[in-house]
Image (cartoon, rainbow, N blue to C red):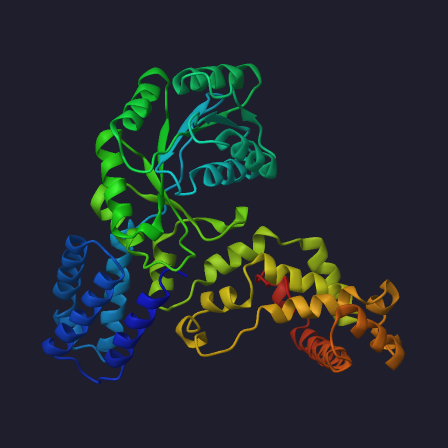
Length: 448
């Protein structure tokens, strides 16, 4: 994730603070100097860092902290709260017009920021919330931009309105809204053209659309991998055309992440979503408190639960619980659970969201490919073998190993682990007695 390096540095600072019984002002000053360097190296805007450190210092050298029994923890708490304030305190939702009025959303940004893909993902999000969105292809310059929007729209099951590349974008936007009125769409999302850099023609085109069409929300797509430039781009768009919010893309890449910590403070505009990968579910709503928690290595259990619930099938979960209790859990169920883990981003991503695990897994060798190897073995089994692992004799195992392209020892190892897990799950199910489920406690939809 973007903040891995920053997170590691901050956790080292905090480890030193926690180790001290009492803190002096000099201790706090030294720690904050290291925090300042870590933030600057993460490409956070210099003025933002300066104000952030000043706010933390004013609170951290107060009487409540210095006389506390756990002053180190108090300083960490203050850093966390100030980081949340920096990113906006509250989660900002994209607003819609009331009733049957059509909400027009204009997406803008530079070329290469992932604007068209993100636009389609956002339409998919709206559709899942019960809206009826229509995508409008207003980028008439970039080769294959219209086709790209149509392909991505199809993936989300959202229609695309296009007039080709021979009409002015403002006229396409007007026609798209007329089409939406006639066909009962209640959200129109305009995918406008980007440029390689900010120029007058692009800005004038966006201004012309806003002057002729009632745009309810203007959303800027920013590539977080461009670091401080991302903040400059956001500031430019905010000043010249006015924006209502920002979506940060590529936050899963090898980037320093400073944009996420700077944009709100510099532009006064909220971050609405962050792109954490290619899938629709990888466009995550931005929660300042959760992001601060991730950066400071405190985990993000709420996002983990959201990811699980997005693919959570209650009927399947109930059936699985019954099968576990009766010791009928088979390789088909095992395969289902593995696919749930993959949907949620893999074991590494899940562990990073667990409190206390963020910085602790960098030295652990997590082989995500091992899941694919296990899948290959299970897919090489017949339906009868998956449903009844007891029939797996040496000759069957030999055939399965050949089909999966692995040594027979790998098949034996998997079968042994599966049997051990099956016993443990039955014991655990007996101990719990279903009480947790009756109390309404959330359970992750996999049995690991």
